[in-house]
Length: 152
Image (spheres, one colour):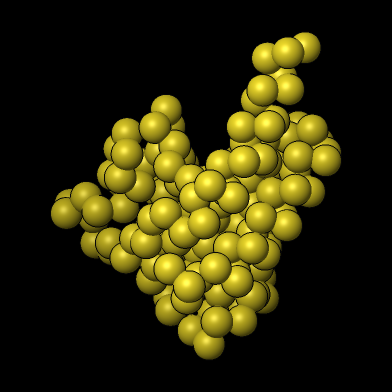
């Protein structure tokens, strides 16, 4: 998956910001058609007290603002952890062309593991999914974060 290693490493830098702020370390970037980053974000629920403060939502908001339009057609969402139902649904609503993620989320993933929101044939838009980009590197900050939480 070399094609998405570099943007995933940018998403990992975002995840590190969440970790340092005491939030679940998930990061995301949105790429335009040319591969340029037009949005970035990391989990911010704790600081913002916003239940929708997920990395994907923040990155897609930034991308939409950069584009001046809510439709993110032609864009790729790159995220360190498989999106949840909210984020998977938002990516469908935003019309992203592709979702690329690193670590699988067997407890809350909605892009193939627990649910598969984005491939539901009843929806009018179904993004391409590329899973397992740098999965070990993406899982590492999550493992560290939750191991530390359990020790406390």
